[in-house]
Amino acid sequence: MSPGWIEEAIPGDLSRQALAETTRSRISDALDVDVGEIDLDAVAFVQQAWELALFDALESSDPDPGEVRRLAEQSFRLARNLDPPVEALAGARFFVKLGCLGLLADRQADAARLLSDHLPYEAERGDAWGERTEAAIWSSWLRLVRKNGWADLDAIGGLIGDLREAQEDFEAEYLEGDVGEARARAWELVAFYHLAHAAELLAEFVSAGSSEGHFDVRQQLDGQFDRAVTACACGELVELEVLIAFQRRGRSARWRCGPSRLVPVRSSQKRSAP
Amino acid sequence: MDGRSGMAHQLERLENDKALQGTLLKWLRPRCKDTEYWPLYESAVRRFLHSEGRDFVLFGLLMRDTTPRALDLEARGKVLGAGASAPTAYELNAWYLPHPVDEWSDLATEQSP
Image (tube, rainbow over all chains, first blue to last red; front, side):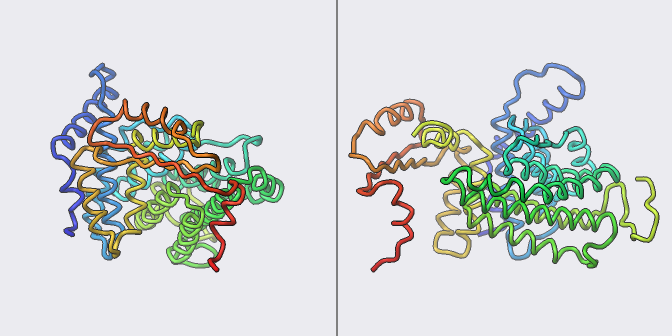
């Protein structure tokens, strides 16, 4: 198996067509002109093909950073032109993935700009516990990618803190609500709780330069991601497991790039304006 | 069979949702890597990509605790068949178990004697 075996299998004509369609789409948006119907099916297919090639590279034993960046760039260029799902939580997952692709492509500024135009979905108090938890998780991760000033980082602590306070009141009823779904719901919550902790660790690190007293946040994050992936495998949560795999890789890029508008500040120093 | 979690909806989504198809291929990768299934996985992905996402078979499995009857799949099979175009194919199977559905979970986890 050669490293570029997936890329080689992507039909060249279709790939060129997809890129042409994204160019037309961006011209249409930038100049507010009608360029006719965009073949989003072609764009979606080729985007998924590049994303698969990226995933294959990331999961290899020794990923080449330059190759990962190149493949992520291809995937990101196409993904940013796709319409997000209409359903709110599916849309949130779409933007989290888009953010991860941008980070892996070393396009953090572009990813942040795209996400800044998107309001993270905030669940209502009457929503099911699972939906409230999921909404808070994706809202936190979107804020971690775009890092729109101190407000985004501070909001993460509030989102996760609110979840902790409400957990005892709502979790049991949610798990008892549908016997057939109880097992999957339980494992999904386990995965989300680990993602929540990972978001807290990263937010604290970006703000203060350390998390829970540690300066190397990677090991702490890896522990949370490992447990989240294990929970997904136990619950047979296919889509969530794959998304977490991208988040895990994206966190490396996030850590290396540093904050887009902030620098890690020691807790003893006064925070400067972003 | 029907409804958002029914087999029909699941098959429809699998056929048309590019993101879901990509997710399944990513999910399979680590489960095939370094196993006897890797050459099959690699071959399947190549065929899928070369065909622009059309060379695959969708398997539908209906499990019931009722008396077998062809009508359970006949109507759905005709609808799917009418809409399918080669190389995409559907294969529908129905399993009729001699035990009530609320016993299946226990049966599946039961240790063999």
